[in-house]
Length: 158
Length: 182
Image (cartoon, rainbow over all chains, first blue to last red; front, side):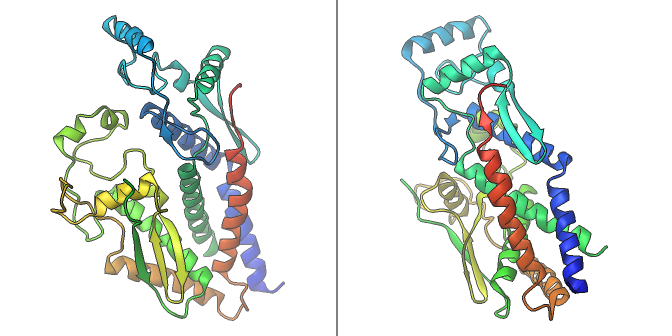
């Protein structure tokens, strides 16, 4: 290995360390959680990993009536309406989306038994919302490519 | 109805390798995203503010947006899914995957003012100003100069390899790691 190759290998190794550092992974994970919450509140779900973001299945007429009643009692979350299908009634289920980091792996999950029950029920009703969509994958690729270039640039001159 | 695919050709030096052009795309993409997030169009002018009716929508409120911060970012999906569509000798073509919602949104933003059935001002973002292009060329030329005489073992080729490795291993592991149950 010549000097250039040696320096390049070291810099690439350092770049990867920067990208996969716990601090950076936490930032990426929180961004993914925020994207899922906002997407769902805007009424979109993703039925399979890397699939398209599509409008969530509509609410039944009887449930819309129930939500209208809840709204009149001030018990419907402010980020929804009686007719809007966005997996929000109290807001607790979406608020329970969490991430955990294990080494270089990020896991997105729902915290709490009750919230998991609600989420599973929604999935059964064809309202899957926790998957990473194709557009989220593109966003991740762009983010990582940019971070790799920036980290390398920062390290290369040293 | 799906809009026509939106794409832009960006001319770059003929002597650049495919790896140089791919790394140039990373820089170009970053410039477009940053500039747009700062309310500036691809012609260097500030975007017009959002309309009153749009700013009163629930979507607008949910995304925590401001009428006077027109940065083409409701979810961020449109701005951050610009793709490298083609790499050729001395050029790249950037744009959006045909038939996607993000493509349709970009077509809307990039339309010509006054187009039939399309009210409201255009907000052009997909492209570079001359000085931005010069900045990209200078940066890639620097890494090319540093790599000169290394027989293909150059910086941009290695950065592309790292991008691919991270994409294959790290991103795919995240995609497979969303689940119900804590």
